Length: 53
Image (tube, rainbow, N blue to C red):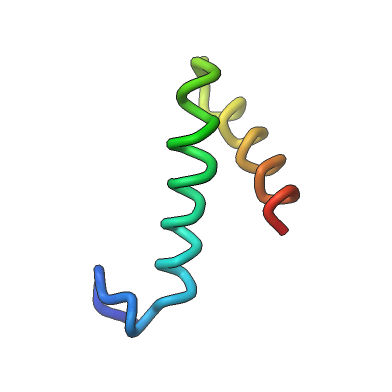
């Protein structure tokens, strides 16, 4: 278990969450499309993860 909001103890996960927020959510997801359901959002997240990896 790690402490919340302490990137020193869980820096890899914290960095990934920051990157996903910056590159996917802030940049693409909610500026270009209105999602009708969670399934549509999940499809786009899956596409972004393939691109990211």
